Length: 434
Figure 1 (cartoon, rainbow, N blue to C red):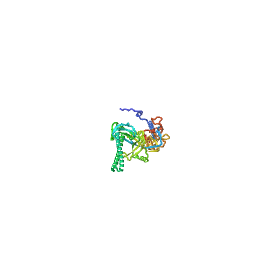
Figure 2 (figure 1 turned 180 degrees about the horizontal axis):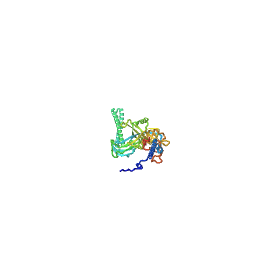
Figure 3 (figure 1 turned 90 degrees about the horizontal axis):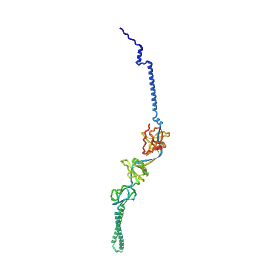
Figure 4 (figure 1 turned 120 degrees about the vertical axis):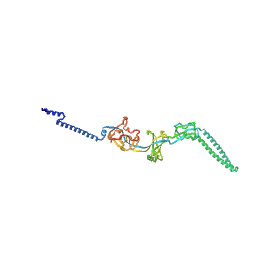
């Protein structure tokens, strides 16, 4: 028995191929073409973006930012003037004269004629020792002097009588010679008595103690009522002369050349005495002397200046900062110290050009003194230099001058030049971008 297999229609195979995801030929080619075109467009866009980014990166950094904004700064014109040159040293005030007043006789202190810390003049009474013992001793010596003086007068009269008698040959020659020797002896005794009277009178004078100099007395060392002796080591009081007064200060040995040049010209350079914080000048004087040797342990030499001290601002043993004027720079270009900036390449300042743009200038500093600095080169007189607002500056940036942040509206453009505590140091601005 034969079984017949039923025939499968052709359309069934075609439908199965379609069910398996196989597209006809024309549709497949169209889809591939669309993918290629889309990839080319994306590649073209990426290429354009890359080219534009490289073109923007080749432009100078900061130029667009600098050209697109205005920086507010404080500028002060450079000026021409004289710059003093000082040498600074630490010094100690030293009294020219200091006297410890002591009694020259022994006795009881009965009166004190001064107040502690008082200014006394030369010759004023400081203390009184009981004068009565010295008055009695003086009277005794004066009595002895009068007695010996009377004996001398009598001896001289006898000598004249003997001289008359010897001419008449009435007395022996030996008696005349003896009388002459007696007169000479009494004359010597009278001289001794006169010295004793003067000594007693001097002791009476010493009982009244006066000031040997003009100055300020210290604290009282002995009170009235105590017995004082000439051998007392501490004395009665200490007097210190305040006008004039000296300051002894030190300088490094390598700075002596200009100082000795001034002394060789018989010129006494000016010396200023400032307080410990260098905020107030106490007095102004002149250099008096330079020590004759250098201290080999410190490499310094001592100098002495004298001050009039009219305002009594200087006291003995007070520490001060001494400033010695050794030279003056004439006709220098001077700018505020606050305008100086430091970088590894050197010292520079920011200058405002006539077109209101910032320019960085390398400068050579000649000398700095407080809030001012003299320049050798780099800036001309009259050119404005920036003293505040340098942190935001770039070369070529447009600037406008005005008061610094936090200042009052009336603050002028030059307000940044006078910062207290400049001390000759350069400002601390950031290094400009290269």
